[in-house]
Image (cartoon, rainbow, N blue to C red; front, side, top):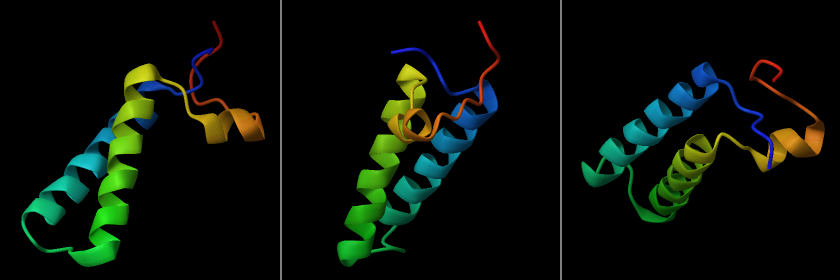
Length: 67
């Protein structure tokens, strides 16, 4: 897998994931919506860690500089 995510994109995803986790564990978002958003937050963190987004690859997008 070649990296297709830049630093700014990775930071934004981690911040969004942290916000969703904070809201979920603070009981602001609950129920099915809360679980779905928490699962999405986990996916955001995982894709940020490996710097690869399968959806970006599907559409041929890159937010990182060329190597």
